[in-house]
Length: 198
Image 1 (spheres, rainbow, N blue to C red):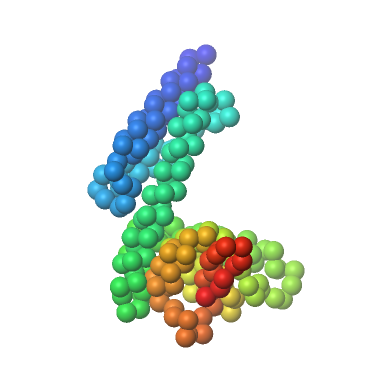
Image 2: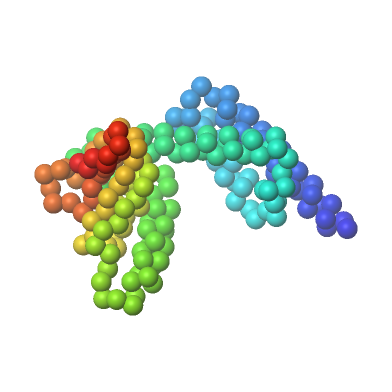
């Protein structure tokens, strides 16, 4: 009985902490990378990394709403972080030589390896590797396709699709590839009712 009370108390503290971080994030003028934004997201990550037995489906409606809003804020902040670093990378003569300046680059190396292993298992019954791979919603910094194209699937063509044409432009600038080069990565944007590939 006592361990259940401790668990309930720990869950309550975690929910309160996450709600406090949400309140602080939602009051910021912008979620562009800054000391305040970075600090709050670091706090959020540290709060959420340890395993928790919270059943999200049983959270009260007001907490569910905060959770939904926090997910949207996280997505917005991630897009702004990627746009920020895409701009920085695009300023280098060879952006691919500077990918490691992105704070979470090592996570993408691990993710790329994991996705390659999954594809490898799927294609292990054949002698072929995938010739084309599409990423939907690749954003301004399509790290996963860059990592896969650079380290794992060098003969595969990657199609990066994003509804935001500016994200596609930034992705092309930060990749170090230009349309005149033979390149295994292509960027596409959704315009009107058709897909336009660059």
